[in-house]
Length: 173
Length: 309
Image 1 (cartoon, rainbow over the protein chains, first blue to last red):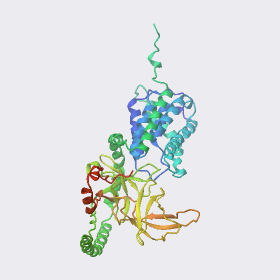
Image 2 (image 1 turned 180 degrees about the vertical axis):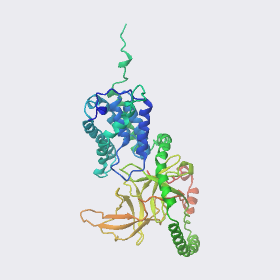
Image 3 (image 1 turned 90 degrees about the vertical axis):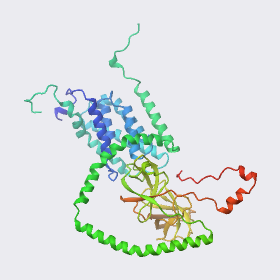
């Protein structure tokens, strides 16, 4: 475990525009025409979970609801299907955030897996009410890939907060 | 004097309260959207926000596609051009014959006092992408409200029926493919004219329902639209029967079909204009007009609904 990623390091406060930009970027990734690949993770769920754990006071159920509505319209799915899944996941993530951040990154990822599975399962439950069948177990594959992505994602999204407060021309990083 | 907590501790409503608020709101949306079609305004509003992001997401993919076709060799285009010219010549003969037959058919129908067949007209649309929803079979095309597309219009490609427009947004619209689980198309068998309804199975195949176990169906039978729904024009090819299971314990046979058209392909499709509601025959309307006061107070005959309920 590199010291840069351990929880003991004091980070700079996050910039609100960066949170917003990362969520928009996740929406963009979700809108890519990748419906042929069932293993593509739900980027919005992943980034939303990340910020609900890291910044539970800024990002939470409200953002989850709005992003969910956007996903519902873009996905041509039932209105409120993604919204419900994201709201529930954001609630669990923000209430567990103090606990999850205590763990090293690998075990954090193990906490993320059930949350991502919850997002998929809620969506399936909502669609199963009017009567659809499970589109194969590959439907849940995206959650596994998302879990594996937790480590690189944490590194990328925390990168701006690693910057030193005072710029030093002689420092290598 | 009461003690106000410092602003640091102010966190708004309790998380559980917020959760129940948002969850109730989402569940209400789910319920309303699945039972009534009243959320289209909200959808259109949100799509104004998501559409630019979607376009931005698709632009690199489009660029790559265009670049590959730009750099493909000239000889391939020449070959394709030669082949298209050949097929055009082949088709020209059939087309000439069709025109003659159509005029003859029109003449005969006039003699028989049968309503003339409606000519096919429509507009070409490009399939942009398949909807990400893994539970349904839908695609998005690049024509929307701006091009006067309305929900309910049938969509065909060069070989047969693809589906039906189910939702219209300002710039794009959504086609439910015939392989979707909720999509039904009234069809008839070309060989003997048996009528039934075909449903999607959700896995790329179709299911011809309500056929008795001893019905005269065979593998390889072609199915065309029967036109009884008032939406699809009669005679458009839909599917081909590939497998029949006759089980005496069920009253209906299970008949599996595959679509004739390239339903899962991407390319250009034709959105056919909505069919005009066929008016009552002249003999019936004349009778209604002279039927006295009781007939006059009757409500007007309900127009056929174009929208799929």
